[in-house]
Amino acid sequence: MMSNNLLSQDGNGLTSAEVFGRGAGVTFDDLILLPSFSDVSGDGIHLNQELAPGLVLSLPLISSPMDTVTEWKTATYMALHGGLGIIHFNLNPEEAAAHVKRVKRFRMGFIFNPVCRSPRDPVNEVARVKESLGFSTILITDNGEQSGRLLGMVMKGNVALEEDKSAPLGSVMIPRGQLETRLASEVSDLTSAREILRQRPSISKLPLLNSDGSVYALITREDVAKSEKYPAELLDENEQLRVGAAVSTHEQDRGRIDQLLEAGVDLLVIDSAQGATQFAVKLIKDIRQRSKSIPIIAGNVVTPKQAEPLIEAGANVLRVGMGSGSICTTQDKVGVGRAQLSAVYHTSLVAKNKGVPVVADGGIRTTADIIKAFACGASFVMVGRYIAGADETPSETVQDQYGRSTKRYRGMGSTGAIRAGGSRRYGHEVDMRTVVIQGVEGLIPAQGSLDKLLPEAAAAIKKGLEYCGCASISALHQMATDGRIRFELQSAAARAEGHPHDIM
Figure 1 (cartoon, rainbow, N blue to C red):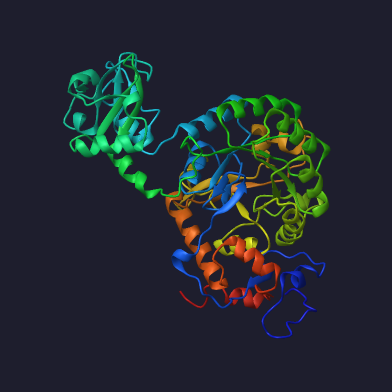
Figure 2 (cartoon, rainbow, N blue to C red):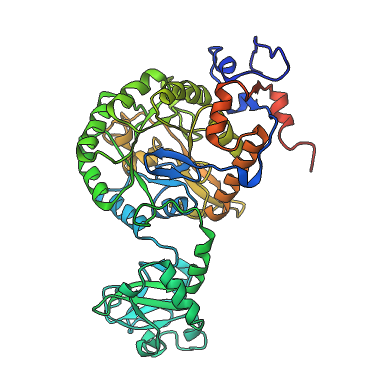
């Protein structure tokens, strides 16, 4: 139990200044928000938060730039739901730029990298594609590549009754002459795709071709129908999904920055465990020379003193947290860091005065933690472990000894991540004899799709705001600042009481 020499004189709890002015580190399990009179509910609550000028997230969650959390697919689904994904930097610069381009090119219902095979490939290739990728539609081109001229299409029904699995796909394909196709220039967006499919209800798959007959993309009726699920997409002025990417402070990453900017990245994250350094300040200034407008998230920091030089150098956003993540061992290894909510509260005070939002990064396990971070001054929350078990993350799914589906998750300071390139984050060459390992790796339960996780998170955040009587996160900040939002410090028994108990 936290010692508490402060008493709520009126029984209504403590203000944030009283909680965090005690000199002790405070984190998620140490406190709980107290409810307030509420005259808001349902549609009267919104989560819109401005991350940088012209960049407003309707879901204020940002996926962490970790190599088991965010590559193109995670970033795509974060943006579809109104959040933002940050591509990690354990990819080489060309790969990182390719992931950015893939997100920018993505349009729901459009498959820009359809599976293509040669007419000479065997029929059993359909089963192999189904097993590895989960679908059976294959486009047949003269060279077996997307760059080849379209000859036909094979779907599951075309091979279901074919007994000779070594027969060539060309013998069972639907010839191009019997297919509905369109030039890519005729179907520029989802609206035009939907109209074509509405007028031609018999079409389930629509190949889009370049002028030379090669494959541009494949439209599927099922995916176009799904597109209506994402009314809160985070789009740029060209109606492309937004995406961020991480860079290190090392000189060799300057070329990475150029390639990311060329690829159309919407935001850069300076990814460093200790973010308040001369190298970070220099990098912010270097990025500003390359682009006056690109938003920059700098960090990680945990004190106002750390934050000030980054803000003065031109950072738009601060990333706050050191050693609080579930897979981070920084505090254990080097004895430096800060309790996460204390870090968020104290850093956000100086950041707010400068008009700079704070991203709380680390220690998030539940939506309750997310709401507490907002109440303590964060405008956004970075999620790693919280979504690491999702289908869309890049880590492999493995069965544990009990047959349960799990996914691999590791810190960027872990041995595996450092060997894969994460040493740039911690300032070491990969000489494992001298590296200070600051992370661990292990298995976590598979969680299903972000299509389920993110809407559930949004609903829980809104419910938390409703109980606090706040119509927005900005209102929560204001009410916490002026003392209308109150907190209570919790004993171990109180925490246990707040969790499910005494049931089988």
